[in-house]
Length: 366
Image (cartoon, rainbow, N blue to C red; front, side, top):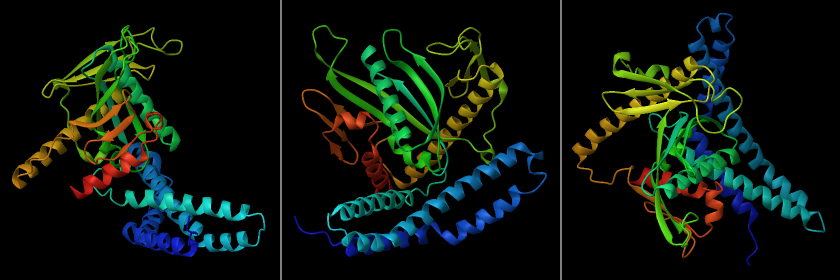
């Protein structure tokens, strides 16, 4: 194996970071953060809670982004010193540690480079993810729960904040559907490439004859609605149903009719929320989810008009996009990017970063 040229690798990642800093415009980010800090320091800030929440949230995100960029810049600048010190250690342990840091910095910069591709209108928003079991009966319900676990493990690995808003459990095993919010800068832009139908092929644990079954789960990803989006909903067009929460829960969760289901009559969109004890809180959360779904529907309709003018005949995001085969061989393959891996266990445990990165690059180039 050829010896690594450390300085060459450092120069390459330094050049990549410089281009990222230019794209993200670090001086502009710092100026915006300073303005928001001044606004957040006003004594009457919380006289208008919604506006105050928006200001503090935006400030937090900017500070996080600036800290990430500044931290990576410092780590890149420290690398030559790290290798210089490591070279003086006779047992070679210092070089191994320096190589690990170089690889870690390279990975972090690669992830940040992908983020610069997320420049869509809503890409920097939080994401609402809904997973539904589709064709396949109990198999599909079990598969939907496996998909939910995959995304929750992915979020856990990246320290993303997740709030599960509603889960409808199937009778025998698995779930009929679930909706959860991922709160993280660029969560929507990152996870929107996961939207579509996910197909599983495996030997069924529910089949006494151990036959191979195919099942499907649908994943929908929408951006969280913002106060400035102006999605007006006529309450006369919304049917409100209350019911008792189902499934696992603490004392009192499923003893009152606190869960809320909203049906938007003109579009047929149905959303539910059962994570709060209060019916009023559940209704408010469900209404926010409904607004997000209507916002995404509006965006899709606008995009369809643009595609019609462009003569775009590309496939819908709602079509099958990834295949997971557990028998007779092990393979997960993205049908859009052709990225694949034989490590199915790692993927189902949330290690889907490469699939997401390939999806973001594919979307940008298509």
